[in-house]
Image (tube, rainbow over all chains, first blue to last red; front, top):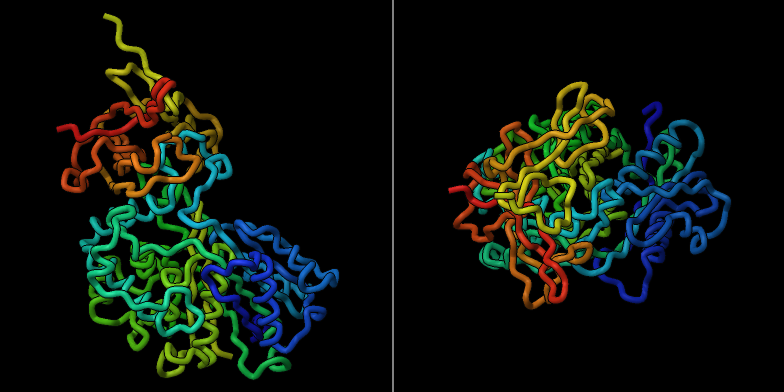
Length: 383
Length: 144
C-alpha cells in the first residue's frame, strides 16, 4: 500500500429533480456528507477538484463550504468529469501536495435530451441544424451495429433496463424506484430504435463527493477505507466509433473504454474475474450491453446469455449497476461517475442494505463513457 | 442541357456536383492517405496537417440506422411546429473507400431499412418554412 490512496468519506445528494436547490447547493451538500462520513473538516482539505456540465464552476462551492484558500481546480470533462476529478485528486495526494483531498461532481440539467452546440465540439453548425447531433442517436446507431455484428436481439436491451429498475427499487436514494415489467419496457415509445423510452436514462440533478487521503493515514479517519487500486482516464483513438461523429474512419479502432479498462486492470494487477461488483455506464441499455464486453467482463456477443441467465443480477456472478445505474438514477453529468464510485464503496463496506451483493465483495469496478469519446475506469478494494 | 444547380444547402462545403447528381466531398491526408468526411483540418491518424479535397462518391451501403423519434431541441433547425414533426431516419452509410458517412435517410420505416442495403445520395429539403427558400441537406435513399 506504499503510495496507494484511499477513499475515507462518501457523500451524495440524491439524484433526480430537486426544485429550489441549485446544482452547486447539491454539490456542497454532497461534500458536507462526505466530510461528515470521513470525520474531517473542510478546513483540513488540502486540494479539491470538481466540476459540472450545466451548473457552473466547482470552485464556487467555496462560497457555500467556506473560503479556506484551498487549491480548487475546475474540471470540465463531460461524462468523465467525476472520474477526471478523482484521478486528479489521487495524483495530487500521491505527489505529496496534500494529505486530504476532495473530488466533487454535481449538475442540474434542463429537462429533455441534451442539446450540445456543434462548435463547442469542433463541428460545423449544419451537423446540429440538420438533426444529427444527438447523443440518443449515437447510442442507437452504435447499438444497432453492435447487435448486428454479434447476433444480439432486442431481448437483451429489455433485460438490461428491467434489471436496472429492479435494482433501483431496492435503492433508497434512487430516482426511479418502480420496477417495470418486460412488456412495459419492450413496448415503450420508440425514441431512437432499437432503443425505447425505458431503455434511456434522463438528464437529471444531483451531487456526489469523495474525501480521499494517503492509504498510510486512512485508518486515522475510518476503519473501513476503500483503496483506489486504479483510476484511469483515456480519450479516443483514431478510428473508434464515438458520439458526435459525422464520419467514421474506414478502419475501426477499439473504444477508449477498452484502453482505459486494460490500463486499469494492469495498474491494479487484477483481472475481470477478480471483480465482485461492477458499475458500467448505462446511459441506455445498448451502452451497458456493449460496455460489459468492452470492459472485459465477457466476450462480445456473450451478453445475451449472461443477461438471460441472471449472471448480472445482484446475486449473480457479475453484479452490474446494483443501485440501478444511470437508468434508475438519471444522469447529472458532472456527478454521475462519482455516484458509481460511491455505490461500489457502499458495497465494499457492506453498507448497501437490500441491494448488498452477498459474500462481501473485496474488489469493485466503475466505468464511465462520454462525449466526445472519453472513458474513466476505477478499480476499488476494500481496505 | 445544363445540369440543375445545387439548391440552398445547410452544408454547402460537403456537397458538390448538381442537384440531380450530388456527390459528397471530404478530404484526404497528403501524408498517409487517410480519408475523412467531412473534410478535416488535420489528420487524426498520422497527425499531419496537409489535406486535399477528396470526393467520396454518391453510393454506398447502409452500415447502421435509427429512427429519430422525437423532435430535437435547437440547434436543430427543421422549423416545423411540434405537432407537425415527423420521425426521420438517420444512418451511417459505408462508402466505397470504407469511410462511413452519417446522414439523414429518406426512409423512416424500420421495415424498409436493413444493414447492408445499397444506398444512393440525394438532397432533401429538411427545413421548409413559409416565406423562405427551403434549406436542403444531403441524405441517402435506398438504391433499389
